[in-house]
Image 1 (cartoon, rainbow, N blue to C red):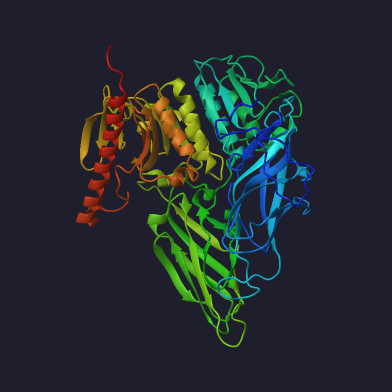
Image 2 (image 1 turned 180 degrees about the vertical axis):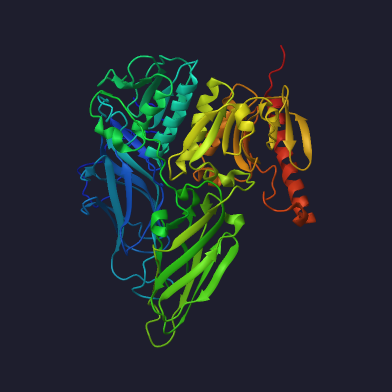
Length: 639
């Protein structure tokens, strides 16, 4: 029996029919599940569960394979928006065709499941490629015989694995390629050094497993908490001990094996450095000891190429197409930025007959609009508007090409963004508020203040959610609330009650005495909501970003707010405004309380801006009122 993971559902599934030919898609018969089979969604494996493929080149995907288990089937849905006949060939890492998925024929969507037992798994990774092969020439709506086949879409992709993972025996194999959850056990009274080591370990392991959404938490219930016997979960205990320092796998080879990190005081953080990258794979023994650590910090850069940013964009253009070339600003590892300049280079088919143009946008702003000519080279210097300097900077190229003259009217133009294009940023402390500043404002160094040790798990989960979208390993540093109040470094604060106001902060929602809350919008109001409230808020203080997790109850509502962010496929980038709040009824809402862009001077605000802000805050108050009404309706009557 497999326990469903916290990051998503694990379903039991039967093996695919091995007697079926490789080019036949067969449904999974859930009525007779194999006892050792698990179905993992591609999102659990760190990949999008959607894919668009075409006939021009294979579309590749790579996922981790659970240790000791073998891939059995890939399942999902295939859809087309045009009438076509053919197959989608599935290739493994050696480029061998191991299965084929029939196209629906008529426009529509059908489920599929294909046998991939022949796929080669290398170094714990499963590599698959998909390519469309159509039967004969297709005739799209524009009448261009032989032109590009319309793309085929796959969605709700899952992989079925069979087998039983081996239990860890050494430090090297304790953290396999795929995990669902990691628990860090520090006990009910952790020392400051234990807390610092736990938070640093969370950051390192999140970076190691990203983009896989492994759930990280800190357990303060007991220093001898039992290990959950689960093939996809691991437990690591951190003990501030005067004994010999090191890392030891206790009960190696047993389902209840756990990794114990011991050292005295600050030496605990030294042991955690074994997980800075994949160097832990060298410790192929049950014990290891980090004897020395250099404090050298990797140099950051204010200029990176598109290749270093992971930007790759090209397309065949006939008519109009949008090419996306956005980038993660956190890759620069310089913290908040106040300016970004792009030197954009692209190469395209020389235009001798016909009309071709490119329009470059960042958000709603047009950065450039130029014609394409016979030179075949585009060379532009662009400035990204400050309003678009978020963690994820959007850059879209709208390319159009209309052929003319005596040549074939169905020939497309090839447009390729040169990966030697560059982005230059200027670091700067700006009074930034709202979720759009995350996680870049915390890259790579930030402070963490926790009011009570039992709130470490909330801090750990927030760090993991930040690290999931950070291309560099975060470096959290534990400080006191008093120290955090006077600092100008990015801060994660986990508190209760009105502790934030005591250190001079004014978040959008400030819990007060009993069940009251102060809403710092326009207008500012004090409300008795007659119940607890758990929030995650991003706001500005001392020219830095503060991410505050607060709960006026037992912490469960703040947990629900974090789970809301975890369930958002785009993470922080998918949130609006500055508040995620969960009320007494358990309903979570995403609000924009303080509303205005943080850098706009007050004298430039027009009457319609104030009106918009007033309406936004009013809507927030209505939502809070609804939560109150629901709670009162569900309140048991006195008997």
